[in-house]
Image 1 (cartoon, rainbow, N blue to C red):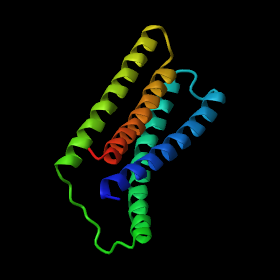
Image 2 (image 1 turned 90 degrees about the vertical axis):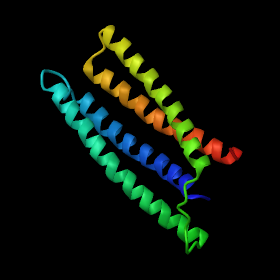
Image 3 (image 1 turned 45 degrees about the horizontal axis):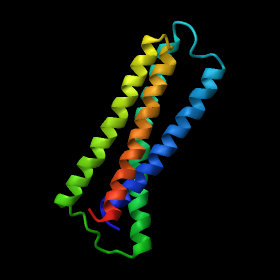
Length: 149
């Protein structure tokens, strides 16, 4: 298994972990009514900033752990970090699909905003599509690696 595929699996894990934690915390806060009133958008902004900071930390930790675990399982003393033209093309194709998914989510959020959706739901719709775009990007890249592109 090459380095890029290991990173895709680590990305899946970190995306699922961080967004699951975020939605558990935020749904509890929402059901308690903490996003109501004039201080609601500021609290939502703080929650999203925490998501971003936590996402970076969790992603780095998952990359390190995944590479350690895969090195132990494969007994690979000299891992290869070579990125060739095929890896770059696979990365670009995955990013293209990811941008399409996120762009669709952005348009959906703007339509929702135009229809009177609250700021809370607009930003969370954007975050759902952000998570979906990351997961779908990984699926596309894995499919291309396994197909032998």
